[in-house]
Amino acid sequence: MRRPTAARRSAAAALAVAAVPLALAGCSAAPAATGSATPPDSGTTRAGSTSSGPTSDAPLTPPASLVPPRVHDRAAVASYLAGHDLSGLTRTDREAVTEAVVRSCPGGPTVARDVGPTAYARAWEGPGGVRADVAAITYPDLASAATAVEPLLDAAAACRAPRPAQGVTTTVANQRRDVAEGMPLGRVDVTRTSPDETRHDYVGVVQVGNVLVRLTYSAPDAKVATEKGSTALALLARGVQEL
Image 1 (cartoon, rainbow, N blue to C red):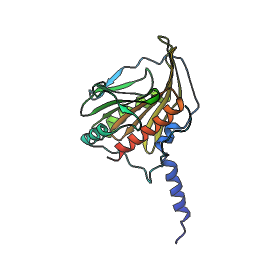
Image 2 (image 1 turned 135 degrees about the horizontal axis):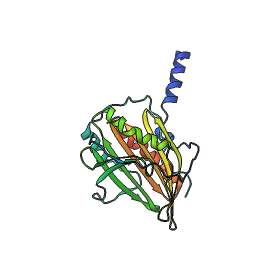
Image 3 (image 1 turned 45 degrees about the horizontal axis):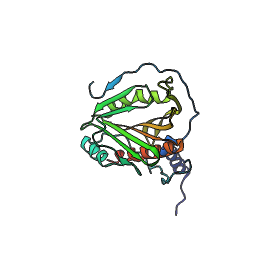
Image 4 (image 1 turned 135 degrees about the vertical axis):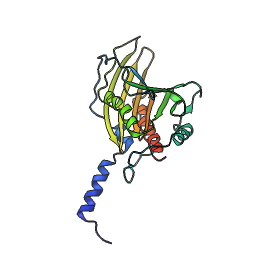
């Protein structure tokens, strides 16, 4: 057997660095930052109009090579999302969600579209007070999707908690924007504390070619929210990427 050359070893190492697993990029902890400053007012863009303990999810491995971003067929995306479920959770009322809302930070910029052929929204719930929801919007091309997601990625990186309101105190941590497996990613951990409960949300927004996907995974346990949420987003994004 021929021994690999130094050039081949170097190329392989570079690829391994570039192909950071999406789940790991979602979970890795950037320096925590919390705040109570009120973010600038941001309008909603109507898209198209211009406990504790390890989880049971198997570890995800990076793909053999990065998949270049491309335009995914609208009907194929809609069909895939309609049949996709989050492991261990049960879908809630099919008619309960009528608008796809993509936002990375509380009070931050928002992209929204009524549910239809190019917009998807679904909610799930599970044991132990776990809740999750997904929103996705399909654009006609890569450029329009990139234009729509850019403010959301910036908002994720600079996310600050809103002021306490109606007895609820909000903190944010692990704000970041990244590129995971070739896909632009923004993520924030949001904690809301009220007299009745404390809930932890993993919020992840990712651009998969011409599709924007937002997943929020909420649980009373922060570790569950982060690990389950980042894994669920990784599986969903890879599913769309493979269409």
